[in-house]
Image (cartoon, helix red, strand yellow):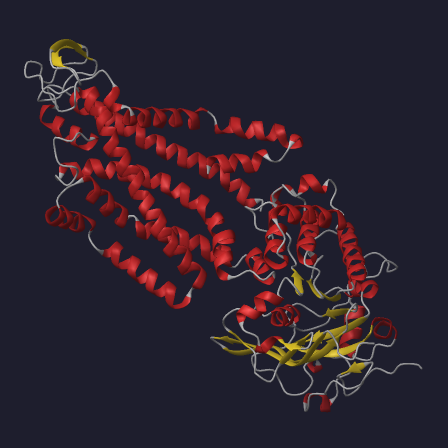
Length: 309
Length: 326
């Protein structure tokens, strides 16, 4: 969608070429630095197994809570003999390489942060658009059921899922996705309500368009942008949520590394080895901040355009 | 002359259910329109012009009701009896409408060309390529400069006048027999207004469309219509050929409308002539002529019984019509 937004602007042609360049520049470092960071995190998560690092579960008993830069002897991934290795970011309280856990943990954070909002967006977005377009009974049912989900204590649901279905990553993704449905539905419905009353929808109807056509071609493309901006904020919220749930033992079960779990495990040593907690906390903080900044910039990009419609 | 008019509206009523009661927005309107003819519908805001056009198109909101006695015969078929599915085949293909505000009547996230192409592929079964070529032709026809480039532009890249031309191009893309223009120039500035009206007139002649031109501006109607119907409070109060209506106005309301047009010959600071009072509530309209409370000629009998629209070529609804020198 970033591309389409820029494309929309780009088709303006030569006459508006300058304006395009100005707009691109207006995105500025505040946009591209977060994008670069997210790119780095995604790259790390994708290639985590290829790095010359010890596996995230490998323990070096001699070097527990070691400071960044400490050298120890450990089995590297794919090798059987011990070799000398410099812990760039140190080790955690049981002697596992923090950098290795960080890149592997990025997978959990990203999977939760991206897949859960996607579920919320697809289900909630569809329900919200239908409710906003058809009004009447459809709307009453959707709004009422969303209110029920919102009123239901989220932690109780997560606890129930963890106890009955087991605390696994897919379960967590679905549970958080389910919980993000109502908010997406509200955003979609609010936008649809105002769009459905716009004249171009009536105009499409006047040209013989069916309800399905109007929903797919007229409403959804217009709802998508605000929904996407909202999703960016949702990503940030859910990455933090994973961290919080780790403290309650509701996140992915150990020893699978996740940023939330790393922060939680480092808590005991906070006075002696603060880096064990602070490094994953910084990674999470930067990622959340990046998603927030990107969402913010995107909103800034579409809002002035919307007002010119 | 063809024996059957293209559009025959008979005793059309449109009611809206509201919490305060039933609003009779259109209250017994009848008229006919032949192919290639232009009918102007004039009236103040809220007199039912737009509701009338939406009723003909079948584009009413869900709280609207049209009594079953109302008939809209289009090309021999009763649109009121058609299913939504049948109507979809007529709308856009055989009858089209242009809305007042071109800022909002185009989809902001679709290129202008795509919006025509979709209509052409849906109604005319054209292929993508052929439809695109046709879109460029239509853009040329409605006077859009650099049509081949403009089809790839988004609505927000065009000016208001250009957007209205795009809206017209979409409306005439399937060669409809009837085109309804609902205040097509109200949102545009005066120089562009004239261009758009001339464009509509030219397209209407070339394609032998019937045109209903809805406006609150008598000046617009004067040069661009064959016949004019003046609406007040949901009813037609005077209907005549355009020249007749202006030369031999019989209905006091039409006269009041004419008098409220500012004239260039007036000295500066001449107060504008207005029609005192407001149009009546349409929830529970008073008995008698609906214009009576604002009419300078009203007598006691005007408030007793509503006058019917009488007359053949020049019809008017008034107990005390204005005298015309013959």
